[in-house]
Image 1: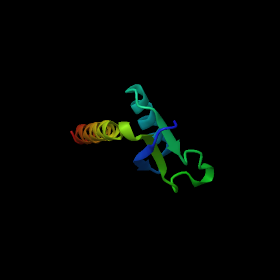
Image 2: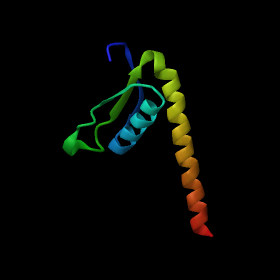
Image 3: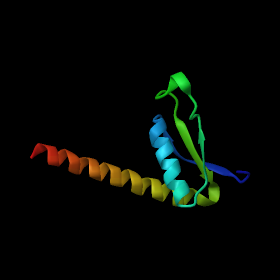
Image 4: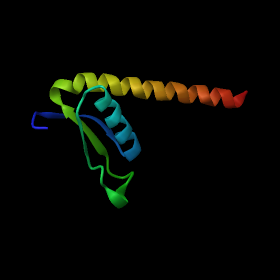
Amino acid sequence: MSEDLETVYYTPNVLEAEFLKMTLEGEGIRCLLENENQAGLAGVLEIKLDVASADADRAKEIIEEVRHTIQHEGSEDDSDEEE
C-alpha cells in the first residue's frame, strides 16, 4: 500500500483484528494490521487496522455494522438462555 493510510480501528484482540481485516477485504478494502505479531504481549498492545484514506469512511461504517450485529446477536443469545 503506497497511498496514505488511516487507522480506522484499534483492538488488543488479534482474532477481532483478523476478522475485521477479512471482512473489509471481502468488501474490496485493502487493509494492513500493525502490531499483530506481538507474541507474549497479546492483549496488551493495541493492534491497529489501517486502510487507504480514501476508504476510511466506508471501512468505519462496515466495522460499525459488524460490531452492532455482533452485539445485537450476543444480547439475543443471552435472552434465550434465560428462558
